[in-house]
Image (tube, rainbow, N blue to C red; front, side, top):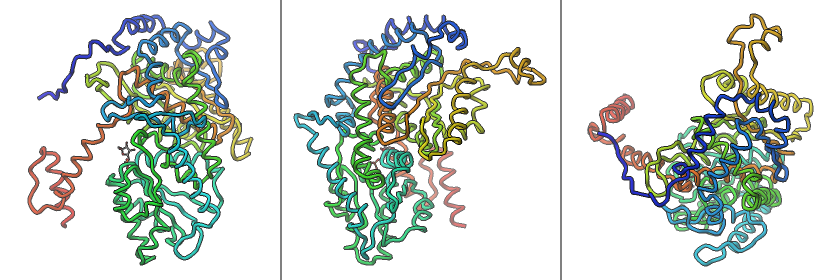
Amino acid sequence: MPITTETPSNADQLPALHQPIHKALQHHYQTLCDVHLRELFAAEPQRFEHFSLQVDDLLLDYSKNRITKETLQLLIQLAETADVAGWRERMFQGEKINNTEQRAVLHTALRNRSNTPVMVDGENVMPAVNAVIEQMSAFAERVRSGTWTGYTGKPIVDVVNVGIGGSDLGPHMVYQALKAYRHPRLQMHYVSNVDGAHIVEKLESLDPETTLFIVASKTFTTQETMTNAHHARHWFLQHAEDDTHIAKHFVAVSTNREAVIGFGIDPDNMFGFWDWVGGRYSLWSAIGLSIVLAVGADNFTALLGGAHTMDQHFREAPFERNMPVILALLGVWYSNFFGAESQAVLPYDHYLRSLPLYLQQADMESNGKSVDRNGCNVDYATGPIIWGTSGINGQHAFYQLIHQGTRLIPADFIISVTPPTGLHEQHDILMANFLAQTEALMRGRTLEETRDSGVAPPHAPKVFAGNHPSNALLLKALTPHSLGLLIALYEHKIFVQGIIWNLNSYDQWGVELGKQLAKCIQPELNAAETITTHDASTNGLINYYRQQRAQ
Ligand code: F6P
């Protein structure tokens, strides 16, 4: 029986990829798909100047892409057809563009350093945003200075953020990225997995007298987080014995005040945010509390400031000089015309090693959708598979496939000009590899070049086709400000792609089904009778698990 979803008519709102511009792009693709990047560089020596742009501390070189000026013009027409500018304004102005949940999408208000009013339902949200930033800063100052102490009077040494998805990946990634700015006494830890091994292993090394837990959950109902939070509380009380001590060791970040109180956390120790902050866009909100604790309020403000600079650029720059728009259009070019299925993110920076993980949620939970914002099935590719790891390690693992495999894998290479370590010689090695990889991917190596370079024997496996596209992103240095620029760049890229694909990038119904089924299955794992209510595979696995566990 085929699975069908209802497809209401949306003829009045044709997605851009169903409009004449799509045909024009398809036609243009036919003229370009067999042209090698070497030819493009040979024909246009000024390619770097023509296809690179800088926003503040961030340089994007996109000249090693399979595009010409005409490609860009056509892609910009696609963005215009999709009304990216109109949607962008609707987002910034607090319209409820998350239509399935009837919510505004305002992570930009969280870092609105110009403090201009942002209205939601007739109310300016900025005073509330600023009040939470102040609350976080004041709390962080107490913890960092040592005036906030644990129940035995000792300063806090370890902070455990208990959260998952957007309540984990963002703050975790930023904490790692800004390690060089960390308070010398304070160590952050992140526990997300409901597999007990994660929290058990973490708690083994911690002292309850000097440990602070942040229970971070937008809903405060997420099973993984609440299970881990209860385990942490139990562990703490085994040592502290008196639950009045909880106030000094547990704080909450959530939109759900009742549930926080129900858990036993003092509402004075709750840091709030709002339903118009999506989980995967929430590191700028109170979900970033562990960041403020680690690097201090000034650095957190600098992070917000970097993102705000990118917001302003995104809002004001013409499309042909607009970094998020250009990155988004390149992604659409490869996904919808070249048939690329994935996008690699390759930071040449140990501190940015979690960026691909973070972007997996940001991008794939946002645009991993086959139904558009009107509820219609789409007939074109949407969000790509995002993957990657620290680039230099990747070179020794999966780059072979990028260079010589059968798939087209566009890749973003990211590096800082100045290393945070001061180890310049090592950094030059890193930089040389960064440059060599993008060059090799672009140029490849012909049979003649293989022969000339003395590689013997000069046979086919030593020839590289090249013509693999990449972007190079260079930060002046990995600072709170430049990190803010970089993250906001990707957020807006995802936004633009969502608009072109006619998606609501801000809901995530796809993750709900599995959660609901898990709730049904959990009691069945302990039921007395043999389970027969599922399909044969699921029944078989449940019953096997129960049998084996009983032995
Ligand atoms: O994975 C689904 C999801 O709802 C994410 O969107 C979210 O970031 C995560 O779960 C955690 O949710 P919460 O912050 O409510 O615990």
